[in-house]
Image 1 (spheres, one colour):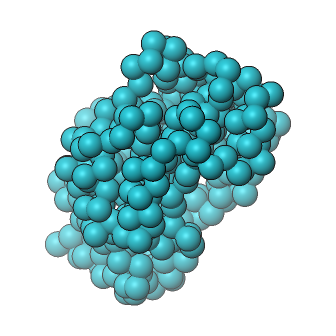
Image 2 (image 1 turned 180 degrees about the vertical axis):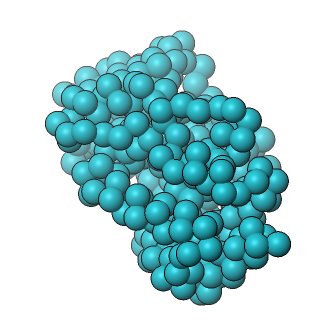
Length: 320
């Protein structure tokens, strides 16, 4: 059994209690932001379920545990996209459904981990529904998602939901201080949703410098001095993280308008609030969220052109 990250312990203990009492649901959905290390939790759970000796943890010595260690257990199945950024196909789910109707090869539990659930296309999701409705005996489904809002309601309604809550910023800072990564700015965890592993990568890869440069360029734009084309190009180079950072800056600026201020706020929040009124910050933050979702759902879109269009509209509202 692996040592767990400290923020996973509470949910793991809850799962262990359910396993010990033999009341863990047949279909479960765990909701966790990226960068929370949910994979570690799922690994511990999978090893515990498949162990032949103990109901709530892995002994590490039985035949099943040895098969899990060698990634060859015949009753343990992981369904995920064959390539990163692609979807899980309906054929993958149909194969999963067929296996779920068969008997356990080792006379124990069968476990299906589907990760991430939002990668299933609509046909695949619909194919999974009937199996979730009528799971066979000793068959568990553990679904993992980073975006529960994008799932079909018919999927979520058939699962017991478990939410992995992000730790407080101070807890993240305490954990990071033990990772020997040097100084960590107070806002680093904040703009990474307080996800510790995402924050760690943010610092280790010196994304601090990149964030500050983007923030500086955006503030210059608010002052009618920035190069909007250059900013659009840089935001489009990593739109998933860059636009998310920008959303936190706009969100913090709105809070400053209400007199709120914490050390974890983005460093430019007060200046943005001074340059842009609350209503414009609010409306443009909403438009930015729509843009982020649009780019996430449709990978073939011209990100730079769409970001440039949003920046022009943002700039236009400031000038009006």
